[in-house]
Image (tube, rainbow, N blue to C red; front, side):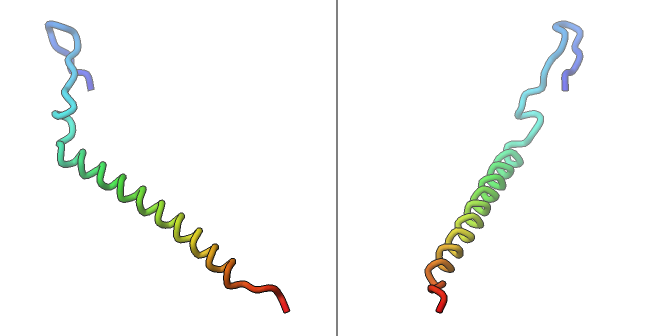
Length: 60
């Protein structure tokens, strides 16, 4: 959010003043874990499809 100052118009806050570093890093860790979970779900569904294809035989 721009903050009005008398001398130069608008001053902007530094990013380190807006969000604490621990919160920022925690958010990055959460996104990394969510991406890993999505990849795991996709891989599990693919693996189960492959195992079902191997166990199903020709009809009698």
